[in-house]
Image 1 (cartoon, helix red, strand yellow):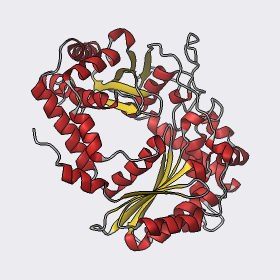
Image 2: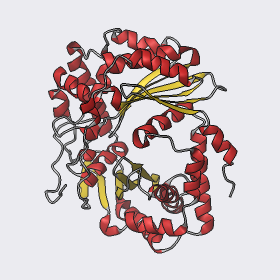
Image 3: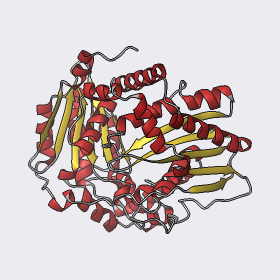
Image 4: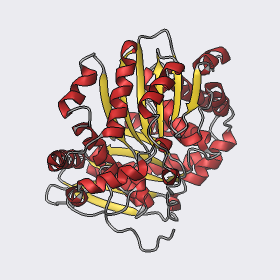
Length: 445
C-alpha cells in the first residue's frame, strides 16, 4: 500500500515552536507562509469533568456568557469585531477542554488575539443577560434532546461512567442552568481560567515571535495562580456494564454498544484507532459493508473511539427500524466476535492503516485542524508528536495487536448498551427536566 513519504511528514512538523511565558501561559504555533489566513485558539484546561452534580453545565454556560460583554467590548462589539474583517469567531466546550477560537486573514492576527484574550480575561458576565442566556442554552439542550442520534451518546457516556463527571452531559441539566448565578460563574472562572491552565495556539501565516509578543502584551500582566495548576480530577469509577432503554416519540431506534477504552496516553492508543477504522469508520468498514450494504438495515452505522486524558470510549452506533433492533444488535456483536476470534488479514490491515494515515494527513490541509492539533496536543502531552512518529506508530500496529485490543474492548460480557426505542405514546424524562440520574450504587471509586 502507498505510504506517506518521510519528507512530507517532516515538512508538516518543521515549523512547530513553543514558548512558555513567566505566568505559565503556553504559546504554540505552526507557521505556514503559503496561506493568507491564521487560525488562533485560546484553550482552557477545563470542561464538564471538572464539575459536580450541582454545577454540571457551568463550563459550557460560561463559554456562552463571555460573549455577552467584556470591560472593553459590548456584546455587539464582540459579534462585529471579527466578522467585520471577514473572519470567524466561535467557541466550544468538551469534557476536558474549553476553546475560544478565530480564523482571520493574517493581517488581522493582532485583532484576533486581542478579541480572544479579552473574552477569557475581561468577561463581565452581565447579570442582565444571565437569565436570557439561560433560555438560549436550555433551548440548545432541548434541541439536542430532539436529536436522538446525537443525545444517545450522552446517554451512553452516563451508562459507561455513571456518577463520575465523565458521565455528565457537557451542556448540563435544566435545573442546574436555572440555578446558576453570576457569583457561581466568577468562582469557577477564578479557579480554572488562569494563564497556567491556558494555551494560545496558532497555525497559518503567523510568525512565532509575533505571536509571543502579542501573548506578552495581552496576557503578560495576568498573574499565575498556583492553586489552578493543582486542580485534581477524579479518576474514573470502576467499570460495570450497564444496559439502558429509553423511549421517545420518534420513528427510528438508536443503539450504542461499547465499552470503556484506554486513555489517549495508553500504549493501546494506535491499535484502538486502527481497530476503529477497520470496524466502523467509512464506507469500506465492516459495519457499513455488512449492515448497510449487505442487509440494508441502516442508513447510519459506524463506530467511534474517544480518547481522553485517563479514560476513553469505544462504541458502535446504528439507527434502524424498531423491527430490526435485535437483528442489528446481533450483527454488530457478530462483527465484534469476528475481530476477537480471528486475526485480521494482512491485506485488510494494510488498507486500514493506509486509510487512517491518509485521512490524518488530509485533515492537516485544514488550517483550523492544525490549530486544534496544536492545542489538544499541548494540553495532553505538553508537546506535539511529530507526524512521522505518528505514522510509524500506525505502521507498527500488527495483527496480534488488533486481536488483543479487540479481546479487551469487545468482550460481550463487558459491553454496555443503550437503546432509544420509538414510541409515540411514551414520554421520557430528559436532561432538560431532571437532575442527572444516580448511578448504579455498586460502583466504587
